[in-house]
Image (cartoon, rainbow, N blue to C red; front, side, top):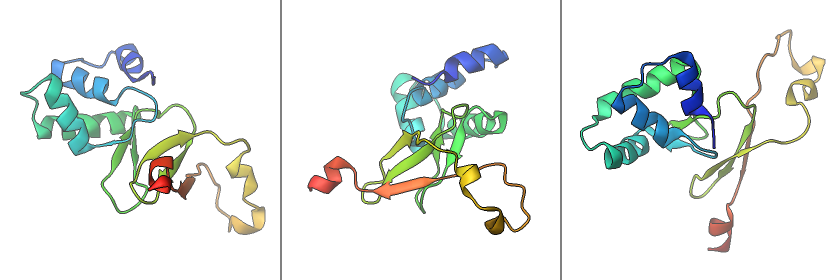
Length: 138
């Protein structure tokens, strides 16, 4: 499980019922939900939660650096609670399933100086693509 709820409590983030349910929906490993998926799951727990509240809460959590906004293709943005654990993503090219991966090595140091064009590189996003077992067997 991610430690999103613990991190938010540690920050003293005001935990309203709506915010709590959004954080609970996002908490976990390999969670990469769209805003609509977050809203649907939150509404199962708290039927009166509005779509606007979910979008506002997601925006606030991204702004706080507590979740990542992930775009792996031209599909909807997804939200990843593992913002404090360096990782990359493995994406199914057919169904869009996303898994967090932690390959060995340092992609920052793998970029040769001749390919940096004077940039001071501070971050790297790597996306591995392929077929998940379900799609590969279909």
